[in-house]
Image (cartoon, rainbow, N blue to C red; front, side, top):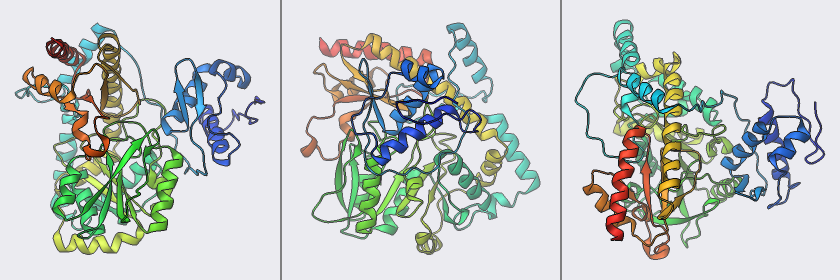
Length: 492
């Protein structure tokens, strides 16, 4: 056990909690209690490691985890500073294995890609159009393992694929979802609180239908998820657009109180970055005070490439005023079209009446096989594998953008998600680039296209949203070559 005079806490090497997590917990506690003032500079990693008698990599891991959670900020050359203040209480974070972040040589990468392709059926290859955002690489899907699971259910319990998912969905799958969010997101829920949906979009539509009436105001992040605008307009609701700053979405301040707010606190869409703990608590206090609801859209939270997953806002809130939306489309298969909605206890009866009237949209057939796939461990083996591969693709893309495209703009590395935003600083307009890129076989979205209230934000956002998960390094490299030609043509 080694004592440090700087923070005044002890490292218990006999404890089951990893050393880096003990350091994180101590800094979080001091931030929440006010013992550390906002802007306080933390000791350099090498100095702090020496004082604690641990490796420097342990300190770096702890600091980077707190950066991801929004407690610390980091700038090259100036170290780490505390950026979150206020009364923040975190739920206990479940321990899990650290993500694999190995690297490979070019020859090994080619071999690995060859192995990846051997696991899929010999079907006609789709046309590859980098850089579509949010698209998983279905070439990595564990087809054989999934087929075995489906075949086993067909033999042993075929009725469950047709009759076992009425109402809120398959009980077995809802229990598996509860186990998953408890381990990965810090949410404690019962199967009775879970609705299996036809993806995240279906879950969001259910929330809007049940929690808002014609004329109500709904708070949305700006920039944000564009289809929500169409859902709200179709329902006769009024959008209240929330500007996004360095701490996440700002609180609603319109003249009419919003009935609910739809947020992406763990990884803001499309900018990236996590909402600070202090801002999360402000939103939860706002919801309690105004009797509003918060819908947490946690669309790709499993894809965090440094440290552990950030606790969900619903975990902070203990599902009091927060509804939690998750999806299997990003982490498993976009063909199954399955997601889930976790409700506060107070809303279960209300939503059950609605589901009984209108019926569920989610397909029955894949629900029991997916539950078995999760419970057998195959789901997590697949998740670990794609996380490792996506991490390598992400690092390749960021490295190339830094080396070859610095004259055009920059990226902010949030160490999470399925896409990165390349912010343009060269005077070129993102819409023109994206239109020209489409002619070169690229699928790039303009950051300005996610702005929902252009009159208030003006030209604040100008950049390219680049997905990387669905493409090999060779495909990403070819796509970057095409993008280079587009930029050079526009510059003339």
